[in-house]
Image (cartoon, rainbow, N blue to C red; front, side, top):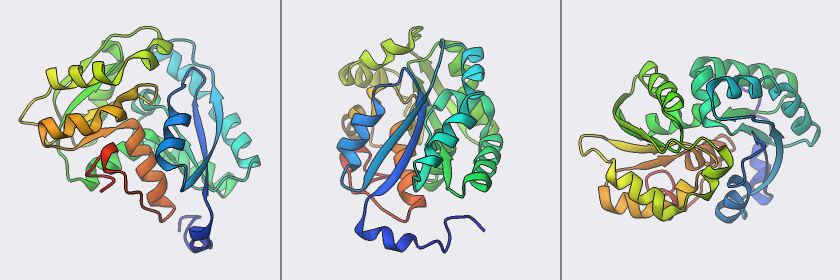
Amino acid sequence: MCFWEGSGLKSMVTRKVKVGLIMPALQVVTEPLYYEIAGKECEFFTTRLYLGGTNVEDYIEMEKMLPRAVQELASAQVDIMAYCCTASGAILGYEEEQHNCRLFEEKTKIPMTTTMVAVVDALKFLKVKRIVLLSPYIQVVNKVEVDFFEKNGFEIVKDAGQGIVDGSAISRVTPAEITQFALENWDETADAMFLSCMNWHAIRSVAEIEQEIGKPVITSHSATLWKVLNMMGKNLRSPQNGKWLFA
């Protein structure tokens, strides 16, 4: 039995959900974006983990600080926690992330999810199998994500990364640039497109890309928010941020 079952969550209908976000320290996109999209439904409380670079080893080192971040948010008595780092989830793996969430739930009695768990669950919800995977990452990190999805039963028909080495620079890529990058790399044989990274303004490109390709576009932000609200028994109508997830 999950800790949130039968725990009086129906009483949340009249109040905002307190969402605890754990994210890399350089991430600056998520909080203002989530308040804009879901500020009427949620309050967001954040703790951060230092990320020293964009190589695989940097994400592994950052992961060591996760228990401290969970403890901090638990002391704030949030309703749910979300670990918001796509790349670290791909490195760790779906089963291991789920396992860690269960361990943290046992300790804190607070439900928890992660971005990559949310992405996989969103893709399964949409019955997607063949994916175009795009990111701002360097190729070695993109390859880790390709392996992650293939291990979880998806086919990557095409992948591309922008090759950005400076993690802070990712947040400065404009939605127009992301849209152009996405349309240039679309493959008509895919069922959907996944735009990876929580420090990338990809969700602001979703409406235009979906209109052009006629298929679902899932982002790290949209999947994580969808999963959090779903676990709390809430829905969000925000089709401009993904008409398949938020219709």
